[in-house]
Length: 246
Image 1 (cartoon, rainbow, N blue to C red):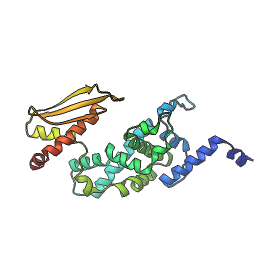
Image 2: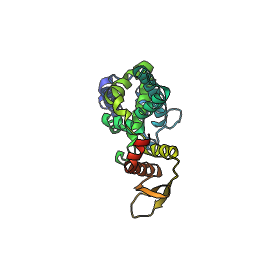
Image 3: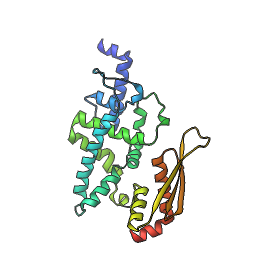
Image 4: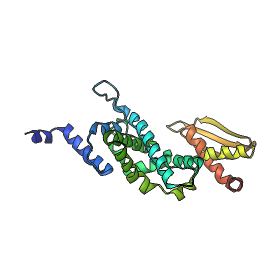
């Protein structure tokens, strides 16, 4: 009789469906499903737990970020025996960079599991990396560190971490440009202004000047994005000089 009731209970059906989907990603049936439910719940749903606390993936994202960083640090420590602290820190930053995690999260298709009142198409790429970290947090709280470490190796390190490829990857063109300017004692300035165009979303325009000369221009929906974009363009303009002096 209980099983018959479950068949016609929408809540039970959705829970079973989520268990199946989670098992496909993590490789086991979750013990404590509520962690995974939280990992894929956006604050726009305005849901609360039995104590009245808001349910959102953000707290699990915080946990997952810390666990992922620890696992990657251990992996690099064992993998690259001759590397110094500076190299290990840079490589860890590249592996856990937002762009890299976004790529991994997107490949897992985890955004399709998100419960939200906002269309997923309206979220930026960062939602993929955020949900991946939240999922890692859920795995850790459900199964413990060892199982979580195995999950990270299976879904992050083995398929997506190539040390040689990552060595040449730039994770922040802005940092690269600033470091080069400081090293070469050049004066740089990011001149930004809000773009009052006809677009539905607010845009920012930025010019990057080095020693008073405009090197590149860009336009984006946020100051952070546009400064990274203009820095990337400037890098390709100056790459011969930068690579010669680096």
